[in-house]
Length: 335
Image 1 (cartoon, rainbow, N blue to C red):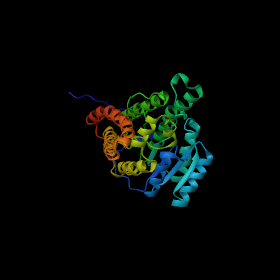
Image 2: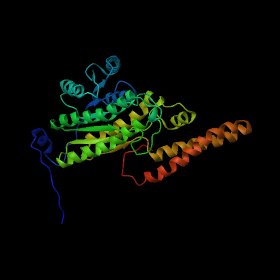
Image 3: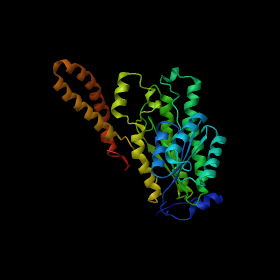
């Protein structure tokens, strides 16, 4: 015997999203909102969507950066394709104002990307971390994400088209330890849990046209990442595994756009850097230094062997990742 239940809301804005089990594909161009999008991967996302012909709303806490980024985009893509405004995602009133601004400019939002995040540019043991840095990290990455998800869902429930929300993960999201930035790792672990909880809530309400996804850009060479490159080992791993924001965005944006274009109502976890890909890159570097040592002879071999030690250690650490990756649920990857 199969038992089941369905929760129906008395909220008319929720009922609007309950029309059918199937969604009609959304035809591009798309209206896109990206938080934390005046620099780094957020800026690269915005530019890639604009290149694809979409319309974009960008935001940041800094009015100066918003003005500069908006001007840069308008010079390249035209006046009527991109709009910018200030927003502190930690403040509910700011996010509500962001929604009003986006609806005023674009009427509706198809894709909302929660990219705003912070590590307070601080890499030290938790015992040495200031109250101010802890508050900065937790309120931006956790409270800010919750506020943005709440407002995005409420907005999309009132749109006949619905919409897609993408929450960006980070180091720690898979449950592995993040020493020297423990608070950041803890907040990113919560991203996955929050996304799953929101997916469950929408299923309980039988909402089909508002979908929450996870998005994993991997290691991106941004100010946020480079601020932690304080050791030779850290710099080595960044050089091997990290990619420029533009490269990551070039891969992820078409995958993001493919979800509304095919009418998918299933939550997706889109990844750029998987365990298998990382293992492959490290192995390739190890092999390179092995052959380089042979070419340089004894004099150059000592240097190559020292660097190769990092490679070998990395291969050991990542080998089990490659094995467990095969058993994970199907995701979009770049190999």
